[in-house]
Image (cartoon, rainbow, N blue to C red; front, side, top):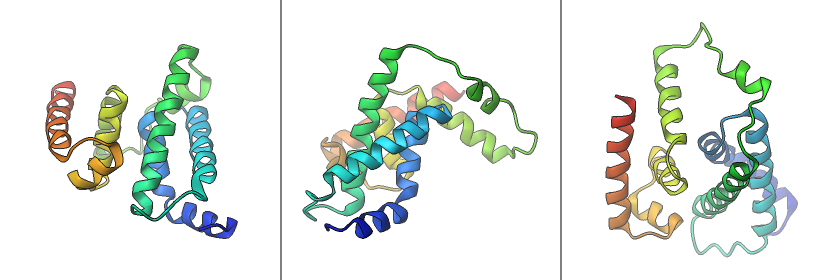
Length: 160
């Protein structure tokens, strides 16, 4: 994998993966755009070193999650800033369905989790197995199962 064309094709095929990481780790449009660009940049920097030892999606998740965690730490150092866009985005949309509202509540609660728990729940929602999640995060499969169970309990308690 060395050509610019290959890289662009891979990004197009896996945009959903990147957007999901961005959605979980940011809550503002500008911050999301910044994180998206940073993830693409980090993927590009690492592209030549991809060795096909893991699945492409596993490699991309690892880079995207690490980039998101670093981005989140930088944002926390900046302090709280509320943009007009954020206020407008949080306005209720009268066309929302019940399902969209439930997803919004879920993602709001997911954003409250720590960085590692966010990564684990995101991978779970993506349908990744415990083994795949362990490979991406570096934890053991058993640890992923235990953490996921605790995260689910925490989310249920927060939503209720």
